[in-house]
Length: 221
Image (cartoon, rainbow, N blue to C red; front, side, top):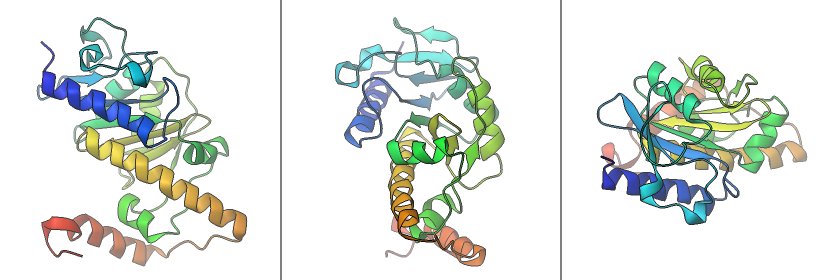
């Protein structure tokens, strides 16, 4: 039976995508791996964010098949399933078509790491993944291929949009929000002149500090 706390969490996080301006109408989705490690919960396909309810969430297995739920899952369920199946450390996946990040994807260009915020959150450039059609696990394969061994929790899938991963769904949503934020700033910077990428040594130092010191884990800054 669907756990009420989990379905409420995932429903709310999906609705948050609309609040952050990362999606329109019914596009995009948030999912989270369930404690059994063999399934995940995701939003249903084609339902307006304004109409979403926790009871509408769908549980799928790691082959993308429905385990529980009355509605069809997101059309990206197979992609999410592939990520969970092949990236055991990932417990949250998000997909958006946020404007600025998706513009970079339309150009088939990674977002260059020229901001300390990018070094902090992404550890370098936000990479481009391959073009893939929707509806099977090809998108998932592209995500795994691109992000395996990469620091970035975000990938720009060519001609499509943004996918982010995280230790849970909340972390993946944060990555999607930050991806759009830096995509916008870097787009503006590029219209003003030549972008100056941060050198790799400083990217490494910024990333290690943010990941290991920032916040309540140690030194409070």
